[in-house]
Amino acid sequence: MGTSTVTIVIIAIVAAAAAAFLSTLITTKTLKRRREQMLKEAENEGEMIKKEKILQAKERYIQLKAEHDKLVNERNNKLSQAEQRLKQQEAGLQKKEEQLTRATEETQNAKRKFELQSEAIEKRREEFDKLQKEQIQRLEQVSNMTSEEAKNILIEMMKSEAQSEATTYINDIIDDAKMTANKEAKRIVINTIQRVATETAIENSVTVFNIDSDEVKGRIIGREGRNIRALEAATGVEIVVDDTPEAIILSAFDPVRREIARLALHQLVTDGRIHPARIEEVVAKVRKQIEEEIVEVGKRTAIDLGIHALHPELIRLIGKMKYRSSYGQNLLQHSREVANLCGVMAAELGLNPKLARRAGLLHDIGKVPDDEPELPHAIIGMKFAEKYKEKPEICNAIGAHHDEVEMTSLIAPIVQVCDAISGARPGARREVVESYIKRLKEMEELALSYPGVLKTYAIQAGRELRVIVGSEKLSDAEADILSHDIAKKIQDEMTYPGQVKITVIRETRSISYAK
Image (tube, rainbow, N blue to C red; front, top):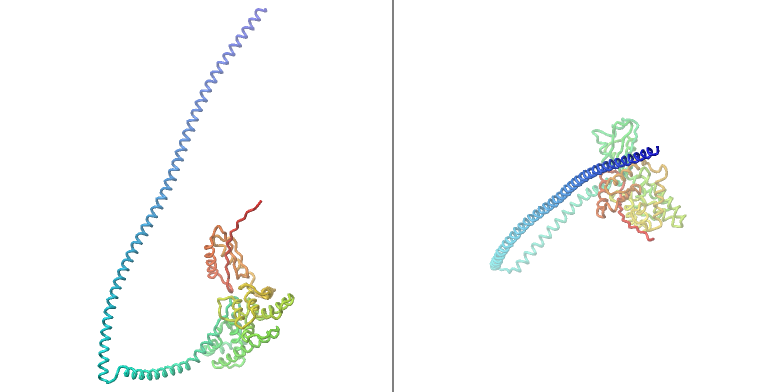
């Protein structure tokens, strides 16, 4: 029993050892096969990577070669263009050199011809002098007179003849001046009457004249339109007779003319006698009345405000304010308001209230004259004040109330503020707010459409446009050109009163911090 057990154990051990050996052998062979397989896979993968890298290298080579060829071609093209330009310049220089050579030759030829002509002229002059001396000698022998005696006699004859002709010429000039003086005076007066107001873009330009019936329209028109033509010629106002019932439209930029035409029509219709001669008489009478009323209004306004020693022309201009308006606001009423406000404000600040009222009354005097329309009304008013010997403080306040000139007196800001107060109160002006805002937005958008513009601001009631540009996008020279371009485009495409100042701002800032 014991021997068999040992035998079994030994057999089991031998079997286990054999199994282990076989297992080891099989495992070894399996690992060997796996190793060979992994080696093959690694070799294959390495070959694939190698091929891929070779392909990438070839592609990169082809790309670099193409870029190099492109650069070489561009450089060759530039060199060809430069060579062509040089050839053209050389050809142009050769052409200019040939032209210069031809011009030099022509100049030399002309110089030689001139020298020859000068020599010939000199010879002819010598021959003429010789012949003249011989002729004088012969004349002296024939007349038994010397050349000096003959010269004196000739001078006396020419002197008397010249005096006679000069007297006749002077008389002709005097007679012509007498005949044309009246005509010229009338022409000057007509040109003066026909001057057009400056800032009337938003002012009313028509007056409606009401009539009792349409029958009066026919009488106003007259036979073959004689009456209406005479009325238009006398007043300088366009009279529109249309289908509007019981109304006639008087159209003109100058409100004084419209008022003259309205009053003249009123008198003619009331009187009933409407014919060309009567029309001229009534218009002349009404014009004289209006001129007297203008002066009277100016004097009364000055007295009411306690303003004295005004020049008569300034008084007349103040009176004309009654017939002017700005943005629907009566100019005389506006100026009176500004004058009163200036007086109150100056008194509160301890300044001269009389001087302030004087400056406030005259601040818009530049809107009344009809000359120099290219200038702002503040500058025109300042020139008028200087012309009629107003004080420098008043002249400066007039010119600076819209920042057209620099303020140098304490009255100037008072006038500016009071002008803004009078114009800004509710109901003072009739301009539609929507149209005003639309104009400012259009102005800003127009400037923003240009490249390099960052921000735009319309200020001074649309009188100035501030344009901010990027310093890295535009140079100083380009900024200058931009301001001119914007100004021209606004001038061509927009409608606005007065003038618009365009200011282009280009700023460069360098910022550093010390820590």
